[in-house]
Length: 60
Image (cartoon, rainbow, N blue to C red; front, side, top):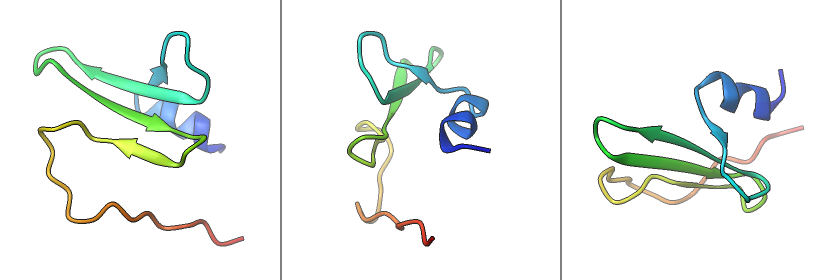
């Protein structure tokens, strides 16, 4: 299964007018998480605290 399919399976949708950026909206909490596939970044917003901004690279 491709990464895009996994992201979509988890409920993320392509952001309107943006290529390669997926977002998931949490309506009850008024919160959005974004995944930028081109930059390989996840924007958790300001309500989720993260320890580190490093990501694991896929080993081929």
